[in-house]
Amino acid sequence: MAPHSRKEELDAIDFDTLKSKKAAVLCLVYPKNNKTHIVFMLRNTYPGVHSQQISFPGGKKEDNDKSFFATALRETEEEIGVSKAQVQLIYPLSQLYIPPSNFLVYPYFGFTNIEPTFQPEPTEVAEIIEIELSHILNEKCISRQNINTAYAKKMEVNCFKYQQHIIWGATAMILSEVRSIIHQVDKD
Image: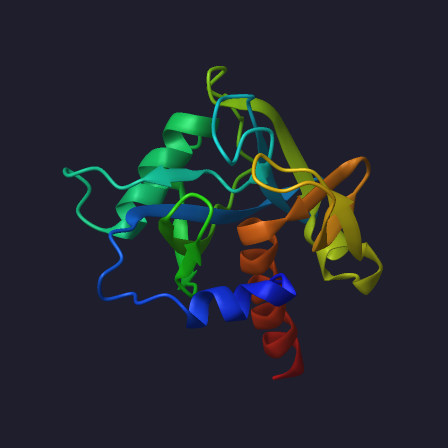
């Protein structure tokens, strides 16, 4: 799901000297109406490169976070109201560098056995988006779209489509890894 130019951009970066910010996100699956769902959030409008983008709950690591997974859990609780006590880790996912915002993101794949009651933080979350996992696993939801961002106009991206929503960028890359893990488990 990465843009074609991403590999060249990453190959040119000296990660030893890069002073990236650290963050963590949580891809959370849960039961709803006897089907497995994934929660996403539409970020509010703000002066930043990720304004109005669909993302997983998550954010910047704080000094008192004991681990990156703790960061993902804290941010999930703060942003969408899911208690960290309800979430169990399935698998840590591949770290991902996001050049436009200079973040190194540590994603996690987790689940809760109960359907969450979301309480979005209104200053950060414009909308909660719940998507059935079966939709994400269906190849028909994968597309290429032209989008406008804070840093590029009419950029063609690989994405997942759901209703009027386009999931692209780091979120799509993480979601692609989750799909790969689930497809591999299904084969075994």
